[in-house]
Image (cartoon, rainbow, N blue to C red):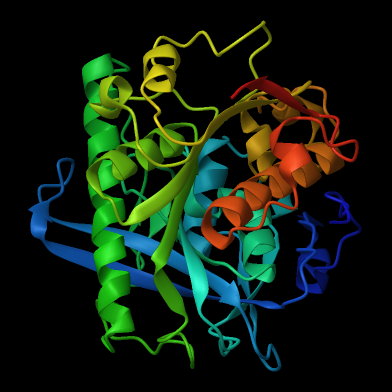
Length: 378
C-alpha cells in the first residue's frame, strides 16, 4: 500500500472565497471509491443515563461505492458539530475550514458481500475523527460503521439540528467503567440494527433513504470492532458481551469492565505509544493480556503520542503552533503515522476476517516498509 500524503494543498474553493484557511485529509489508497450514509438510530429499550430520554446514537456507514457521480462529499463534521468543536477551542480554529471527506453521500454501493467493522471513537472525540482510517478500510472492501456515543464522545449533531456535547465524567474508575458499558451497549444495538437492515428494514429513525445496494452487502458473519482510546476499551467490552464480533483492536486505550479479568477467546490486537520496555504499564493491560486465549499481539507506534491513531495527527500540522502543541501527536511525521496505522489495522482484519496472511511481517513488527511499527509481545 502506497503511503498517501497526509498534508496537501487546499482544495476548498468556497472556504478560500470566505477567507478561511482550508484543511485537507489524504485520500484513501484502495481501488474502490468510497460512499457513506448517516443514520439516526433510537433504542426504545434503553434510557440514556445522561439525558433520561431514550438512548439515541448517530452512525456513519462507509462502504465501497459503485458510482460517485453527482454526489456531494460528506463534511468531516456537520455544521452544528463544527460550530461546537470550534467553540471548544475558544475561537482558535475560527479562521479554518474543516475538511470534507472523500465519502460520497449515499452513493450506490459496489456489489459484493463485505466484512463489517464497528468503530468507536475516543472520549470527547467524534465518530469522524478516524476518517483517514475508515475510508482506507472501505476503499479496500470493508463496510465500516462508526458510532457516536452522545454525552461521552464529542460533538454529536442530530438531523433535527440538536447538538449534544460531552458531559465530563469525574475521572473515577467507576465512572469510566460505566461509560464503557454504555458504549458497548450502543455498539450491540447498532449491530442489531444492521441485522434488521440486512433483513430489508430501514433502521433510520426518520426512514431517510438508504443507498442503493446497501442491503445485501453486509456480511454479518464477519464482524470486527476497533476503537481509539475509550473506543478501544468499548471494542473489547463489546467482544466480551457479543460473540457475533470475531476480532477486535484497541488503539492505545485503558480497558474497563469484566473483560479485563475474563479476557477473550477471539483474536485481539493491542497497539500503544508508551515509551518503556515491554507491555503497556496501564494497570488494565497485563490482566487482560494474560486472559487472551486466542491470537493476540501487542504492537507499538514509535515516536508517537496518543492522537497519532486519529485524523488529528494529519490535521495538526495545518494548524497554528499553540493549538498543535496541545494535540498529543508526538514527533512521528503525519504521513508515516497515517500510513502505518492504516496498514496495521487493515493487515489485522485481512488476516482475521478474510484469511489473508500477506502482511504477516507487519503484525510481527518486522515490515521494512513500516519501521515505525514495533513488536512488543505476541
